[in-house]
Structures are given as C-alpha cells and as structure tokens.
Amino acid sequence: MGTLYGIGVGPGDPGYVTVRGRQILEDVDVVFYPASKNKPRALSAVLPYIGDKETIALDFPMTGPSDKALETKWKENAGLIKEVLKDRDAAFVVLGDPYLYSTYSYVVEILENFGIGVVTVPGISSVGAIASLLDIPLAQGEEKLVIFPMTGDENELKKVLLENENVVILKVSAGPEILYKVLKDNKAAFDFYMVSDVTAEAQNVSKNPEDLLKKVPYMSTVVLKKKK
Image (cartoon, rainbow, N blue to C red; front, side, top):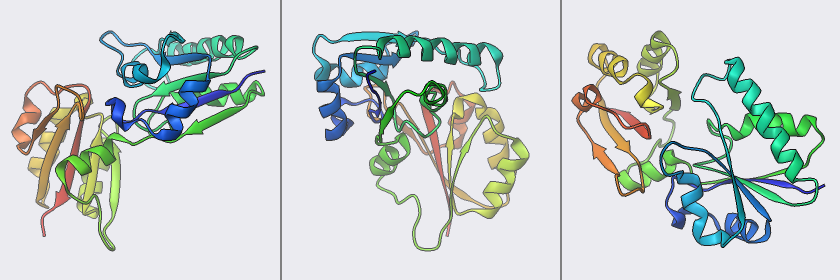
C-alpha cells in the first residue's frame, strides 16, 4: 500500500511551495487536487514541479461540512484515493495549509479509518502571506489574535471584535454585508485591510470598509487591527 502526502502549496504562487513539498511532488506517482470551475490554483501552483505526472481532480460541493452530499463526496474521494494507493504513492495538494479550513482534513479522517498511512506537509497560509504583503505584524507581545470565518455567528463576531486586538476574517465573501454592518456598529475602531487573491495576478488590497459593499472575490481575507 502506498502513502498519501497532503501538501500545503501556499497561497497559489509556485514560489511559495516549500522545499519539502517540492521534494515529495518529484517523488510521487499521482497528484490529486481540488476541482474548480475556474483554473485550479492548487494544481497551477505545483505544475512546475510535477512534469507529466498523472493528475486527478477531486470534486467537493461548495456547501457546509454538515451537508450530507458533501459527506458522501468525501467518502467517494477517499475511496478513489485508496484505489490509487494500492500500488502507488500520491500527493493531495491544497492551497494554504492542509489543516487550516481545508477539505483535506475531512478526507484524511476517512483514510485513516481505512488504515491508510498519511503524511502531511505544512504550507504557508494565506494569513501569513497577507501579513507579509501588508508588512504588518498579526500580533505582538501580549496581544490576542483570533481567526474568524464569516460563516460563523454574527453575535459571536461582535464579541470577538470587542475582546481582541487583532482579528483575521476568512471566507469574507460568505457575508461581506454582515461584516460591514458589524464594523459600523462596533464601538472599537479598527484599521481595516482586505486582500483578495494574494500572490495572484488579480491580487488587490483595500483599506476601505466600503468595498465590502461591492462584489467581494471568493479568495478574500480581512485583517482588523484595533487602533491604539
């Protein structure tokens, strides 16, 4: 039985793939990647390192983790990976880090129940890439840092903003209008940074919360730092 290597390939630029990730990609026989309606960014990030290796797209419906259709798809994809691993090693490449809001983590749970060995290689998260792009620290000294998905509860978000100096909002496109309203109503003042498609050609940086009321790209993250 072969081994599956879960590889975080960073925010999408091939230059952000780690040395360890590249080494494994050169050695495996097959590369799995999340399917996409547009150009699959995880696959694009590793194309310089995989030559003519076989690549297989894994389809995951864009629904919540409690959705039965998605759970069924996890099992189907895990079964496909298991079949390939009978006589070959494979990599499953994902954007960012494999264990930060990644579908990879759900598939791994199923594979481990099958008794299949999995090795995970960390990647540079979009959060880290964005902080470097903006040239700002995510947290210093005794400051608190919270990562919050916009798929979360609005009241919980209000509480997070009141109690923390630094907040990173992921999945912004799931509720930009809600985020805008919460920021307008919040008593504390924050410096606002929204970065879309970090490291890609379409990369954009906004420091204006009003841009939340426009079309927000899917790959958008907001960094909030409480004013001192």
